[in-house]
Length: 441
Image (cartoon, rainbow, N blue to C red):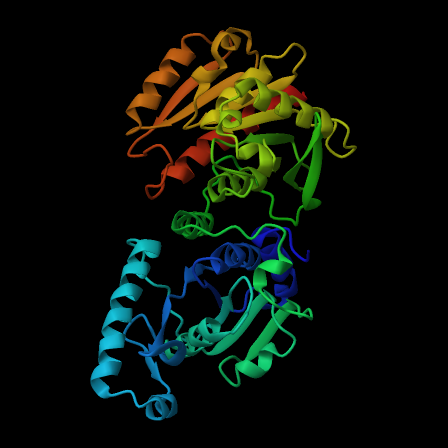
């Protein structure tokens, strides 16, 4: 397999595109699978991220044959020759366009919400997808980007067939592709994990990219240098090996291990956003999967807090074997059920954990272990997450360590509302920087 997943593909593609950094770039991801790839490119280039929503206009009796494409702001591209050869009447073309325009507008509202479309006027536009097969959608996206005022269009994909550039003509000014393998049957054959991308993941990527555009740092500590390590890792935890992503900034003052919640993974855009805020404050981060793919199929494992906590303890042990991490104080960041696992693990004898932060978590799942937690514990809950607020208050009453409950106004359970995840990330950052620095003295 060429790529581990779309995140891996995006990071590798971003490395190839570094020369564009600072060149008035806008990165556009093709929904849905192209957006996680584009997210990594945008973050690496320090560029804004948006979706480019296009709809192919298919010939009525042969919809796979495109006779044109439409984009936002009324952009309309018609291939008059195809229309003529296929004998499509004006009324038939209008009918197809009305139907596709309604779907385009629905998708744009769904993905972008209240955020305005980013202007492409006079900009270098990097159109990103997770791969090219026929190329029809990517070609339409390039045409739409140019029609919306792009000065230069770069089409960038991780994988495509050997002759892929021939399919685009002058639709793009530059083509970037990491792999052009042969034989080529489908994009998915070149990914170890090619799970379908959900609408929610697309929205998460866009929201986190928007937040990350200007994260606020009130600590006075910044770290803008390239990290010493920023890589996928495999960690042995008991009888299994788990995937993770480690980021180690230069002169790191501590390391935070993330324990995600049910139904999530190390690829969670929310946790990756929080990790980026911590990295900017000079903290290393390790995001890892608590369960293997096979284990996740059994939903009882997701709520087996003792199993998840043992995995966290094993991963912590692995961290302490890494020469460049061994002396750093360690904190845990848990979300949802992961918060219960983090507190359970922190209560282990000789755990040596300096701080724990729970975001929208279920600390109550740590049950009788709560009284044994020695790490300074911060509980962050959304102001509209009424049930979880009460569960956090009950758990807080059982803690004997230094602790604090912070309620983020206007936030629901997933902190999807504008500014709420940033607020939670900053509170977590301040807690970790304070308590991990104290543990290092």
